[in-house]
Amino acid sequence: MTRFKARIWMIGGLAALAAGGAQAGSYGFQIVDDPADPTFNQLLGINNAGTAVGYYGNGTVNPNRGYTVAAPYTGGGAFTNENFPGSFQTQVTGINNAGVTVGFWVDGSGANYGFVEQGGTFTTVANPAVQQFNQLLAINDSEIAAGFYTDVAGNSHGYTYNVGAGTFTSVTVAGFASVQATAINNAGTVAGTAGNGASTQGFIDAGGIVTLLNGPAGSVSTAVFGLNNLGYADGFYTDAAGVDHGFLYDVATQSYTTIDAPNASKVAGGGTVLNGLNDVGQLTGYYMDNGGFTDGLLVTTQAGTIPEPGSVALVGLGLAAAAIGRRRRHG
Image (cartoon, rainbow, N blue to C red; front, top):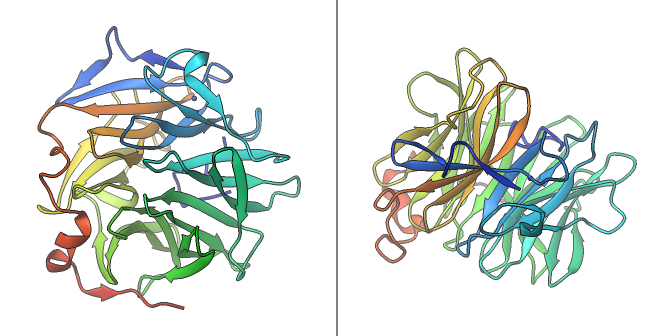
Protein backbone atom coordinates (compact mmCIF):
# COMPACT_ATOMS: atom_id res chain seq x y z
CA MET A 1 0.00 0.00 0.00
CA THR A 2 2.24 2.74 -1.27
CA ARG A 3 1.94 6.38 -2.18
CA PHE A 4 5.55 7.01 -3.16
CA LYS A 5 6.51 7.84 0.43
CA ALA A 6 4.01 9.51 2.68
CA ARG A 7 1.56 6.63 2.65
CA ILE A 8 4.02 3.83 2.23
CA TRP A 9 3.83 3.35 6.01
CA MET A 10 0.69 1.31 6.59
CA ILE A 11 -0.42 2.18 9.61
CA GLY A 12 -3.66 9.15 16.02
CA GLY A 13 -5.04 11.87 21.07
CA LEU A 14 -2.95 14.91 21.41
CA ALA A 15 0.02 15.80 23.51
CA ALA A 16 1.82 19.10 23.19
CA LEU A 17 5.42 18.89 22.10
CA ALA A 18 6.06 21.21 25.02
CA ALA A 19 3.76 22.75 27.57
CA GLY A 20 1.19 24.73 25.61
CA GLY A 21 2.59 23.48 22.29
CA ALA A 22 6.07 24.05 20.90
CA GLN A 23 6.76 27.00 18.64
CA ALA A 24 9.30 27.20 15.83
CA GLY A 25 9.38 30.46 13.96
CA SER A 26 5.81 31.41 13.11
CA TYR A 27 4.35 27.92 13.61
CA GLY A 28 2.83 26.02 16.51
CA PHE A 29 3.13 22.23 16.69
CA GLN A 30 0.93 19.61 18.37
CA ILE A 31 1.20 15.84 18.43
CA VAL A 32 -2.08 14.16 17.44
CA ASP A 33 -1.95 10.48 18.44
CA ASP A 34 -4.95 8.23 18.96
CA PRO A 35 -4.68 6.63 22.42
CA ALA A 36 -5.52 3.29 20.80
CA ASP A 37 -1.94 3.22 19.45
CA PRO A 38 0.32 6.15 20.35
CA THR A 39 3.30 4.54 18.58
CA PHE A 40 2.17 5.09 14.97
CA ASN A 41 -0.15 7.79 13.63
CA GLN A 42 -0.40 9.82 10.44
CA LEU A 43 -2.63 12.90 10.13
CA LEU A 44 -3.48 13.17 6.44
CA GLY A 45 -5.99 15.95 5.78
CA ILE A 46 -8.08 18.70 7.38
CA ASN A 47 -11.08 20.86 6.42
CA ASN A 48 -11.85 24.47 7.28
CA ALA A 49 -13.83 23.45 10.38
CA GLY A 50 -10.64 21.91 11.74
CA THR A 51 -11.79 18.30 11.46
CA ALA A 52 -8.78 16.18 10.53
CA VAL A 53 -8.51 12.64 9.18
CA GLY A 54 -5.85 9.99 9.51
CA TYR A 55 -5.13 6.55 10.91
CA TYR A 56 -3.16 4.65 13.53
CA GLY A 57 -1.30 1.33 13.41
CA ASN A 58 1.79 0.50 11.35
CA GLY A 59 0.13 -2.34 9.44
CA THR A 60 2.40 -4.96 10.98
CA VAL A 61 2.06 -4.91 14.76
CA ASN A 62 -1.36 -3.27 14.53
CA PRO A 63 -3.46 -2.98 11.37
CA ASN A 64 -4.30 0.46 9.97
CA ARG A 65 -7.40 1.90 11.59
CA GLY A 66 -8.91 5.12 10.22
CA TYR A 67 -10.39 8.01 12.15
CA THR A 68 -11.58 11.59 12.14
CA VAL A 69 -10.45 13.90 14.95
CA ALA A 70 -11.74 17.31 16.05
CA ALA A 71 -10.50 20.10 18.31
CA PRO A 72 -9.07 20.08 20.89
CA TYR A 73 -7.49 16.95 19.34
CA THR A 74 -6.81 15.40 22.74
CA GLY A 75 -8.07 12.29 24.50
CA GLY A 76 -10.02 9.37 23.14
CA GLY A 77 -13.24 11.41 22.95
CA ALA A 78 -11.80 13.61 20.19
CA PHE A 79 -11.40 10.62 17.86
CA THR A 80 -14.15 8.93 15.86
CA ASN A 81 -13.34 5.58 14.30
CA GLU A 82 -13.96 5.32 10.55
CA ASN A 83 -13.26 1.98 8.95
CA PHE A 84 -14.68 0.42 5.80
CA PRO A 85 -17.04 -2.39 6.86
CA GLY A 86 -15.33 -5.78 6.73
CA SER A 87 -11.95 -4.33 5.82
CA PHE A 88 -8.66 -5.72 7.07
CA GLN A 89 -7.15 -2.21 7.13
CA THR A 90 -8.42 1.33 6.45
CA GLN A 91 -6.84 4.75 5.99
CA VAL A 92 -8.93 7.93 5.91
CA THR A 93 -6.97 10.36 3.74
CA GLY A 94 -9.14 13.36 2.82
CA ILE A 95 -12.14 15.40 3.98
CA ASN A 96 -14.05 18.29 2.40
CA ASN A 97 -15.94 21.13 4.06
CA ALA A 98 -19.20 19.16 4.05
CA GLY A 99 -17.54 16.36 6.01
CA VAL A 100 -17.42 13.89 3.10
CA THR A 101 -14.35 11.71 3.51
CA VAL A 102 -12.26 9.55 1.18
CA GLY A 103 -9.56 6.98 1.68
CA PHE A 104 -8.79 3.39 0.89
CA TRP A 105 -9.36 -0.01 2.43
CA VAL A 106 -7.52 -3.30 2.21
CA ASP A 107 -8.97 -6.79 2.04
CA GLY A 108 -7.47 -9.99 3.40
CA SER A 109 -5.51 -10.62 0.19
CA GLY A 110 -3.83 -7.19 0.30
CA ALA A 111 -5.86 -5.58 -2.51
CA ASN A 112 -6.45 -1.82 -2.10
CA TYR A 113 -9.75 -0.12 -2.95
CA GLY A 114 -10.67 3.54 -2.73
CA PHE A 115 -13.78 4.62 -0.87
CA VAL A 116 -16.08 7.59 -0.34
CA GLU A 117 -17.96 7.97 2.96
CA GLN A 118 -21.06 10.20 3.18
CA GLY A 119 -23.28 10.27 6.25
CA GLY A 120 -22.13 6.84 7.37
CA THR A 121 -22.52 5.21 3.96
CA PHE A 122 -19.37 3.79 2.36
CA THR A 123 -18.96 3.35 -1.40
CA THR A 124 -16.04 1.47 -2.95
CA VAL A 125 -14.21 3.23 -5.79
CA ALA A 126 -12.02 1.25 -8.20
CA ASN A 127 -10.77 2.45 -11.57
CA PRO A 128 -11.82 -0.08 -14.24
CA ALA A 129 -8.27 -0.10 -15.63
CA VAL A 130 -6.93 -1.82 -12.50
CA GLN A 131 -9.44 -2.56 -9.78
CA GLN A 132 -7.18 -4.28 -7.23
CA PHE A 133 -4.94 -1.32 -6.30
CA ASN A 134 -6.68 2.03 -5.93
CA GLN A 135 -6.32 4.84 -3.41
CA LEU A 136 -8.40 8.02 -3.08
CA LEU A 137 -6.38 10.73 -1.33
CA ALA A 138 -8.38 14.00 -1.41
CA ILE A 139 -11.82 15.43 -2.19
CA ASN A 140 -13.02 18.98 -2.88
CA ASP A 141 -16.34 20.66 -2.15
CA SER A 142 -17.73 19.72 -5.58
CA GLU A 143 -17.14 16.07 -4.60
CA ILE A 144 -14.36 15.54 -7.09
CA ALA A 145 -11.76 13.21 -5.59
CA ALA A 146 -8.10 12.70 -6.50
CA GLY A 147 -6.30 9.38 -6.45
CA PHE A 148 -4.45 6.77 -8.44
CA TYR A 149 -4.20 3.10 -9.35
CA THR A 150 -1.07 1.00 -9.75
CA ASP A 151 -0.59 -1.34 -12.73
CA VAL A 152 1.07 -4.77 -12.81
CA ALA A 153 4.41 -3.14 -13.72
CA GLY A 154 4.31 -1.09 -10.53
CA ASN A 155 3.63 2.26 -12.21
CA SER A 156 1.03 4.58 -10.70
CA HIS A 157 -1.61 6.33 -12.80
CA GLY A 158 -3.31 9.42 -11.42
CA TYR A 159 -6.95 10.30 -11.86
CA THR A 160 -9.79 12.41 -10.60
CA TYR A 161 -13.10 10.82 -9.72
CA ASN A 162 -16.49 12.54 -9.95
CA VAL A 163 -18.48 11.10 -7.05
CA GLY A 164 -21.88 12.11 -8.39
CA ALA A 165 -21.30 10.91 -11.94
CA GLY A 166 -19.11 7.93 -11.07
CA THR A 167 -16.60 8.88 -13.78
CA PHE A 168 -12.80 8.92 -13.92
CA THR A 169 -10.48 11.41 -15.68
CA SER A 170 -6.80 10.58 -16.15
CA VAL A 171 -4.09 12.86 -14.75
CA THR A 172 -0.74 12.49 -16.50
CA VAL A 173 2.54 14.40 -16.50
CA ALA A 174 4.60 14.24 -19.69
CA GLY A 175 7.90 12.43 -19.26
CA PHE A 176 6.97 10.50 -16.11
CA ALA A 177 6.03 6.84 -15.88
CA SER A 178 4.35 7.09 -12.46
CA VAL A 179 1.87 9.79 -11.45
CA GLN A 180 -0.21 10.03 -8.29
CA ALA A 181 -2.93 12.68 -7.95
CA THR A 182 -2.84 13.50 -4.24
CA ALA A 183 -4.77 16.78 -3.81
CA ILE A 184 -7.49 18.83 -5.48
CA ASN A 185 -8.90 22.24 -4.58
CA ASN A 186 -12.24 23.88 -5.33
CA ALA A 187 -10.98 25.33 -8.62
CA GLY A 188 -10.30 21.78 -9.81
CA THR A 189 -6.54 22.31 -9.69
CA VAL A 190 -4.79 19.00 -9.02
CA ALA A 191 -1.50 18.45 -7.21
CA GLY A 192 0.53 15.32 -6.87
CA THR A 193 3.76 13.46 -7.32
CA ALA A 194 5.43 12.17 -10.47
CA GLY A 195 8.42 9.89 -10.75
CA ASN A 196 10.69 7.69 -12.80
CA GLY A 197 12.22 5.23 -10.37
CA ALA A 198 13.06 6.22 -6.81
CA SER A 199 13.29 9.99 -7.31
CA THR A 200 10.06 12.01 -7.47
CA GLN A 201 8.95 15.55 -8.21
CA GLY A 202 5.85 17.36 -7.10
CA PHE A 203 3.47 18.93 -9.59
CA ILE A 204 0.50 21.27 -9.72
CA ASP A 205 -1.86 20.91 -12.70
CA ALA A 206 -4.06 23.95 -13.33
CA GLY A 207 -6.41 23.20 -16.19
CA GLY A 208 -3.84 21.03 -17.96
CA ILE A 209 -0.90 23.40 -17.45
CA VAL A 210 1.58 21.60 -15.21
CA THR A 211 4.13 23.20 -12.91
CA LEU A 212 6.85 20.91 -11.60
CA LEU A 213 8.06 21.42 -8.04
CA ASN A 214 11.65 20.36 -7.40
CA GLY A 215 11.85 21.53 -3.80
CA PRO A 216 14.25 24.01 -2.23
CA ALA A 217 18.02 23.93 -2.71
CA GLY A 218 19.49 20.68 -1.41
CA SER A 219 16.47 18.49 -2.10
CA VAL A 220 16.94 15.26 -4.02
CA SER A 221 13.28 14.18 -4.12
CA THR A 222 10.04 16.13 -3.67
CA ALA A 223 6.35 15.25 -3.22
CA VAL A 224 3.24 17.43 -2.96
CA PHE A 225 0.33 16.12 -0.87
CA GLY A 226 -1.84 19.12 0.01
CA LEU A 227 -3.33 22.06 -1.91
CA ASN A 228 -5.68 24.73 -0.58
CA ASN A 229 -7.82 27.45 -2.18
CA LEU A 230 -5.52 30.35 -1.30
CA GLY A 231 -2.44 29.55 -3.37
CA TYR A 232 -0.51 27.24 -1.04
CA ALA A 233 0.62 23.63 -1.27
CA ASP A 234 2.44 21.40 1.18
CA GLY A 235 4.42 18.18 1.13
CA PHE A 236 7.95 17.09 1.84
CA TYR A 237 11.40 16.89 0.30
CA THR A 238 14.30 14.56 1.06
CA ASP A 239 17.82 15.90 1.43
CA ALA A 240 21.09 14.24 0.41
CA ALA A 241 21.39 12.62 3.85
CA GLY A 242 18.02 10.89 3.42
CA VAL A 243 16.18 13.07 5.96
CA ASP A 244 12.64 14.25 5.15
CA HIS A 245 11.56 17.88 5.63
CA GLY A 246 8.04 19.26 5.43
CA PHE A 247 7.45 22.34 3.31
CA LEU A 248 4.86 25.01 2.57
CA TYR A 249 4.91 26.25 -1.04
CA ASP A 250 3.64 29.69 -2.09
CA VAL A 251 2.35 29.47 -5.65
CA ALA A 252 2.45 33.24 -6.27
CA THR A 253 6.09 33.64 -5.28
CA GLN A 254 7.17 30.08 -6.19
CA SER A 255 8.94 29.88 -2.84
CA TYR A 256 9.35 27.17 -0.21
CA THR A 257 9.30 27.39 3.57
CA THR A 258 10.74 24.37 5.39
CA ILE A 259 8.63 23.24 8.37
CA ASP A 260 10.15 20.57 10.60
CA ALA A 261 8.69 19.25 13.84
CA PRO A 262 11.04 20.24 16.67
CA ASN A 263 11.36 16.65 17.93
CA ALA A 264 11.73 14.98 14.54
CA SER A 265 14.56 12.53 13.99
CA LYS A 266 17.40 13.89 11.89
CA VAL A 267 18.69 10.51 10.66
CA ALA A 268 18.15 8.91 7.25
CA GLY A 269 14.59 7.66 6.93
CA GLY A 270 13.37 10.06 9.62
CA GLY A 271 12.10 13.60 9.58
CA THR A 272 8.83 15.41 8.91
CA VAL A 273 6.17 14.95 6.21
CA LEU A 274 3.25 17.35 5.62
CA ASN A 275 0.14 15.84 4.03
CA GLY A 276 -2.61 18.45 3.87
CA LEU A 277 -3.74 21.97 4.70
CA ASN A 278 -6.90 24.03 4.92
CA ASP A 279 -7.68 27.70 4.25
CA VAL A 280 -7.44 28.84 7.88
CA GLY A 281 -3.79 28.18 8.69
CA GLN A 282 -3.74 24.52 9.75
CA LEU A 283 -1.47 21.87 8.21
CA THR A 284 -1.44 18.12 8.87
CA GLY A 285 1.26 15.49 8.66
CA TYR A 286 3.48 13.31 10.79
CA TYR A 287 7.06 12.87 11.90
CA MET A 288 9.33 10.12 13.18
CA ASP A 289 10.75 10.83 16.62
CA ASN A 290 14.09 9.74 18.06
CA GLY A 291 12.47 6.75 19.74
CA GLY A 292 11.33 5.35 16.40
CA PHE A 293 7.65 6.22 16.89
CA THR A 294 5.62 7.97 14.17
CA ASP A 295 3.47 10.79 15.54
CA GLY A 296 0.56 12.57 13.90
CA LEU A 297 1.25 16.29 13.56
CA LEU A 298 -0.92 19.40 13.49
CA VAL A 299 0.88 22.60 12.51
CA THR A 300 -0.80 25.95 13.12
CA THR A 301 0.40 29.12 11.42
CA GLN A 302 0.37 32.45 13.16
CA ALA A 303 -1.70 35.32 11.78
CA GLY A 304 -0.39 36.58 8.46
CA THR A 305 1.46 33.44 7.40
CA ILE A 306 -1.46 32.30 5.23
CA PRO A 307 -3.93 34.95 3.99
CA GLU A 308 -7.50 34.93 5.19
CA PRO A 309 -10.11 33.42 2.82
CA GLY A 310 -11.13 35.90 0.16
CA SER A 311 -7.85 37.81 0.14
CA VAL A 312 -6.32 35.56 -2.53
CA ALA A 313 -8.00 34.12 -5.61
CA LEU A 314 -8.28 30.35 -6.00
CA VAL A 315 -4.92 28.86 -6.88
CA GLY A 316 -6.20 27.70 -10.24
CA LEU A 317 -6.53 31.31 -11.41
CA GLY A 318 -2.92 32.22 -10.78
CA LEU A 319 -0.92 29.21 -11.85
CA ALA A 320 -1.05 29.50 -15.61
CA ALA A 321 1.31 32.43 -15.82
CA ALA A 322 3.90 30.80 -13.58
CA ALA A 323 3.62 27.31 -15.04
CA ILE A 324 6.35 25.47 -16.83
CA GLY A 325 4.00 24.74 -19.69
CA ARG A 326 3.72 20.96 -19.64
CA ARG A 327 0.17 19.82 -20.33
CA ARG A 328 -1.92 16.98 -19.09
CA ARG A 329 -2.99 14.29 -21.50
CA HIS A 330 -6.34 12.65 -20.95
CA GLY A 331 -6.65 8.96 -21.53
